[in-house]
Image (cartoon, rainbow over all chains, first blue to last red; front, top):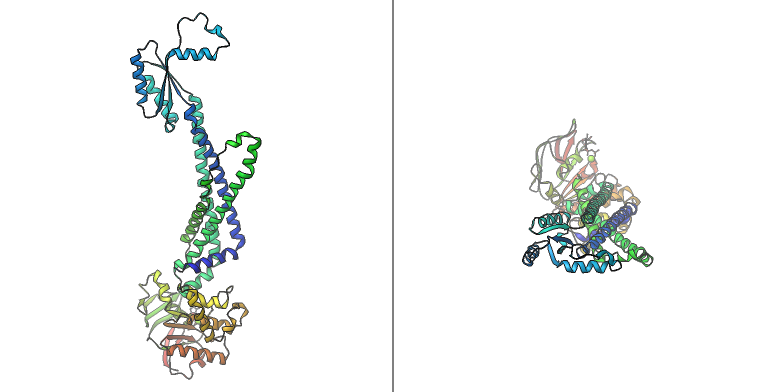
Length: 291
Length: 220
Ligand SMILES: Nc1ncnc2c1ncn2[C@@H]1O[C@H](COP(=O)(O)OP(=O)(O)OP(=O)(O)O)[C@@H](O)[C@H]1O
Ligand SMILES: [Mg+2]
């Protein structure tokens, strides 16, 4: 295929119809910018919840008066489970010490206390991948079935809130990406269609002179590619400007903003994504065209 | 080279060509003539396969109209240089580009394109207009650009539809001389015209069309 000349045709066309092209480049840029912001939010939420396993633990309270042997067995049983990252045995004496420590300003609470009323307990940390609501719930039920386990306690409400939020954010992000991508493809599709119809007469002449379909189509594909890539570059500049000009500035006065992570390397894909969407739109347009 | 056997072409409710039979050999120069509406343009469109016949068989340099694949038609057309009756010039491109496009669609490199385009423009006395635009040219000049575009790629067949329709007798004579020169080098030339002057003193075959019928054949 005579690539250089078809590239020239595509570039000429970009400048011959500046308004149509500029408008679609801007639309694509804005669309990808919004996608980037959504991605930034979801990404930061995920990063924040990734630290969750450190904080989150399953507390298993054991029956009173279990033998050392039995406690070791129970600990072993938990360690064998896939989802479990670590098991810490807290003997009831330690638990009491801890409690006393916490309440050392009000020692009267412990007056007249001969026996330790607290049970032995296990503090179980989970692996990151196991931190779903279902897994934790299943694990808690399994734990309750183990002989010697009296009670299982975990922040179900907290966990389910995080879980729902995460799921909501993910679906919101996915829907947004799908809709906006479809929109961008549609914009490229319409642009190429308009340009194609405007050149119908010229294309007919090319055909009569012996041009192949490839020769006729490639300028439009290249144009879709250029429009998409330019829109992508525009959105890349946009998110960077957004981050460095507003988020970073705000984080000076509002500390919360300083914990926002900016995954610059991901955003470098924007021009490639734009390019891909642009070619797709052009491809769909050409595929549906009869000429 | 070009063969029609019992070819009929209908448009909607009207027959443009009826039971046409002829054979044009490689290297011939042939005229089709006849009044307006007699089917000259339709006949040429059948040759470059812009139309398909409703009945009959058309064979062009080995390509059969009823079995040719859509995707190989471009390659058939690359053997043919066409002078369109309605010119089909690209109005917002220079004269140079208008002629060069015939080579560019073939994937020729720009370096080789330049001398060929200037050669073709010289043949039609328009070398000095190469940077101008079609609408700034007179009708006759535009027609010569179309002729330059048709000959630039050294086709094996030239189909010229009323190639001197807008030319004064002197220029028309010059253009006809160019066609004869090209024909002398072995190119088959088919000219459709109602201008009897063009073939008055040649000894070429002249095929007469009338309302879609091939009525007679003689030597100019
Ligand atoms: N696309 C078309 N649709 C319908 N009828 C057509 C079409 N093209 C040509 N015709 C008809 O076919 C007949 C032959 O037309 P054609 O253009 O071949 O004539 P022609 O000999 O080239 O005439 P002219 O000397 O005026 O160019 C005419 O009656 C015309 O009306
Ligand atoms: Mg005609």
